[in-house]
Length: 123
Image (cartoon, rainbow, N blue to C red; front, side, top):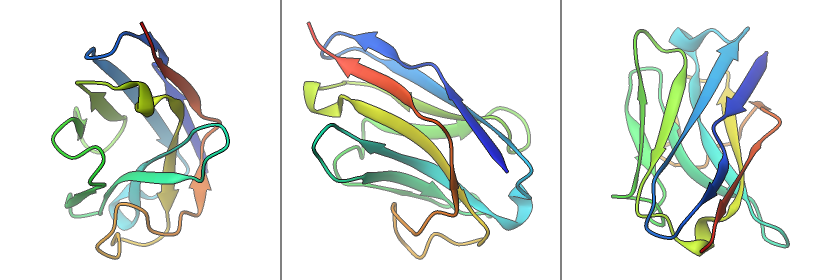
């Protein structure tokens, strides 16, 4: 399984950014997929999880600001981030798991994740 993120960078507070995740080797019809992030010195934080039947669970910290979607089929997956805050600064990881459901959570146990992409929100 390979998950490859792209689209990170520097953005001003209040700005927007879109990340993408290309998955290979993961049977997306039978898997759930999502994003988590980790800031320096902080614990990993789950952002969202999408079940195989397209139900999305969002963390409270990003609800209303972040959305996830896919163009055609299920790959690639995008993370659209808006109204970004300095506290959103972190390395963002695309993640997947060999279970259809998200256990009702934005942060289920993940089996796979990518190398991460840095997002920095600063003026």
